[in-house]
Image (cartoon, rainbow, N blue to C red; front, side):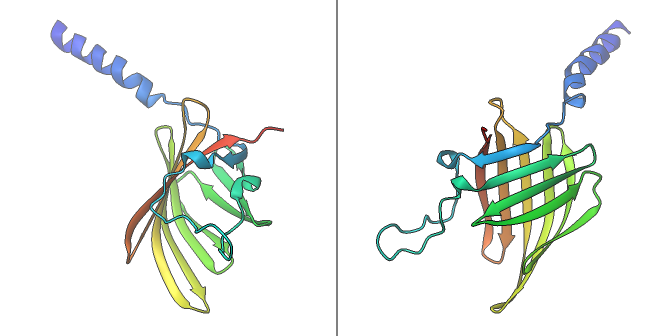
Length: 167
């Protein structure tokens, strides 16, 4: 009997920290550390005549988080879009211009996981794809985001790291 009790005690001690893992608070203003980005997409060509979007380092993310939801405001080229996700697994629908994002968000330990689909209608026609975004805090207090797109061309994941904006 003492062997079973010892095994149960060891099991409880090992799993207690996992069960009690604290959920991070992502609230604040964030800017990407572009040097840490890992992407399967080709970089834009440089030089005269190259068409490329302006550096995103002047833009960023602003996040508001409560006990039951997170709102992420992304600013790019002076346009801000807001996406709100609830943590209870309910379906959330967010619109960004021509796109409709239908997702569900849940906690997986200390990671926030959002999964769903995006449907888009433009002058080029209709298209849709699946997405998965996983967000967590690193040991350095940075926010890591792994964004995966799955469509007819396959699965592609972009890894980005954000630092809290100073000032």
